[in-house]
Length: 161
Image 1: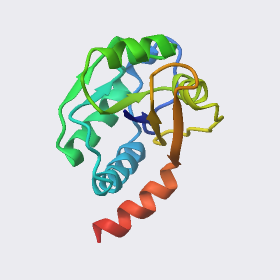
Image 2: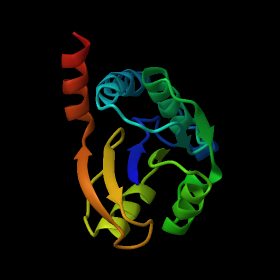
Image 3: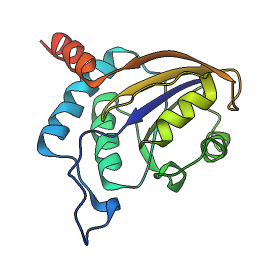
């Protein structure tokens, strides 16, 4: 299985009295994710759907990716902040997909990459980690690459010209 783990794009800061669930992408964050999506389109991702946290910033990121990749989006509570590797395994077990694209949050994503591959990575907003898995258990995968947002944007801009 190939696993694409996408951190949502740059979002508004938290505010007292406002739910973390409602934090949206910033205007610049939305533009950046759209440019990054142009790069991902050229990667020939073979996923058949995008699975996303229901948090607003993650859903907005997934919708922008959906527009570029022409894939449907499905929300799942198992991708919210604090989700475990067992949650990810449960989610993946619901699908018979060889390529799974998930939009989620830190620290989930970094923890999943570490538990699956043994690699510690820094996933800034908009970053993508790509793993190949023999099984979705600790040590069951290999980190193929991490695409930081600035690299995605440069490649997306080049391919959009």
